[in-house]
Image (tube, rainbow over all chains, first blue to last red):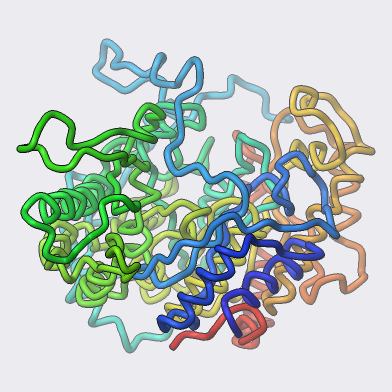
Length: 115
Length: 458
C-alpha cells in the first residue's frame, strides 16, 4: 500500500472522512519519498486531538468531511511519514496565568503547587 | 460520594505515600538488586544486560488504555492506567504499568503534572514531574548537539553542501516558550556563522524522542539517530546525521537514558515510566524498552497512548506494535461524563451542570472509537473516569449503552467504571475483571489485523 493510500485508509476508516485533499506539491513530495525508498513507512497523522475531523469544534462523530493534508515530513530516524493536517503545535505557550505562578517550596522544603 | 471528607490534593496524597525502597520494589517483580541502577532511594534504571537476559521469557498480556475524543483537561488515561494496574494487582494478577514520562513544559503551564491523580498516582510524584532521572535533558542535549554540529559544519565550509536557505534541523528546549517558535540565529558577525531563521520545538516533539521510544536497544538507537535527516542540498538531496558523524556522540549522551525507569504506584506496584513523544508529530507512546520490560517481568502490562483513540490507539497499533512486534490483548477506552456532554453539544463552560440528554447524544463519539478499535481485532472495555460532579442519572445512559447486547464491537464493551479521588480502590475492580476475562478469553487471537492500515514490519 502506498503512502497516500495509507493516509486515505486512516482518514476514511478511523476518522469517517469522505476524502483526503492535498496540494500538488504535497502529492509530489509523497511521490519523491516513495521513489527514494520510503514507501514502506507507516504514516503518523498529525491532526487535532479534539475532533475526528480537522475542525476542533466538530464534536461527536462527524462523518463525510474532508481531511486536508497541508504538509508531509519524513522522520527517517523514527521511520515514519508525518502527515500534517491543519495547524500543528510543536512548541506550546504558557497560559495568561501559568501553574508556575503557584509552584513554590513551603517552610518544610516541600514542593507546593504541582498537580 | 458516600464517604465524605476533605478531598486532598494530588500532591498531598502523593507526599503521604509510604514508598518501598527501590530494591524492594524491584524484588516485587523479581529483579535482582544488582541489575537495578538506583537514582536516589525510590527510582532506578534497569540494566541492558538484565533486559537482554529476559528475551526468551513469554510475554505477559498487553492492555492499552486509550480515550474518547478529549476535553482540553484530558480524560484521565494515566489515572485510569494506574488504577487498573493497582486493581489487577489487588485481585492477584502481577501487573506493571508502563507510562509516558512527563515533560516540564506542561507542568508549569496549564495541564499540570502527568503522574496520575487522586489515589491512582505514581511516586515520587514531584521527582517524576520535575527532572526525574534526567532522560528529557539527555534527549534535549542529544538533539541540540546535532543542531550545533549542523551549524558548525556549515560554518566551516559546508562540505556536505547543506542548503542553509531551506529548513534544517532546529533546536529544542523542555519548556513551554512561544517566544522561541521562530528565531534568528547566527547573528553578530562572521565568527558566528550564517544568519538565518530557525526555531525551537519542545523536547518531546523532537524526532530524537520518537526514536528513543521506538529503539530496540543501543545499536538500533545509533542506527536510527544516524538516519535523521538534517537538511537538503541545493539539488534537494537529503543529508543525514550519519554523514556528519553525529550518531555516535548522540548515542553516548543517551546511553543511560535508554534504560527504562522503575518507580511505583501508591500501592507499591511496579511502574515503568520511560519516554514520552508528542502524539501528533510522533506516535505518543512510552518507550518500546519499557513496554517490553513490563511484558517480560509481569503477567499483565498496562500501557497508554496519547490523545483520543483516533490518534493514540491507531498509532499504538499501526506504528508501535507493528514496529516492535507487540500484540495487544485488550484496550480500555476512558470516557468521562464531562467529555460525553461536550460531544452532546454542551459548551465547555457548562459541563458542570447535569444534562442526561447531552450525555446520551455524546455517546456517538464513544461508539465510533469502539468501532475503530474493533477494526483492529482488539476487544475493548469502557472505563468511566468518574468525577465528583457527575450525577448518578448521567451515568445511566453510559451503562445502558455499554450493556446493549448488539455485538457492536467484538468485545461488546462490558460496563465498568472507577471513581477518581476517594473511592477508586474498590471501584477499580469492575474494570479489572472484564480486562482479565477478555485477555484470557481472546488469548492470542487478538493481534491487530495485518491490513489494511499500514505496512507490516519489514
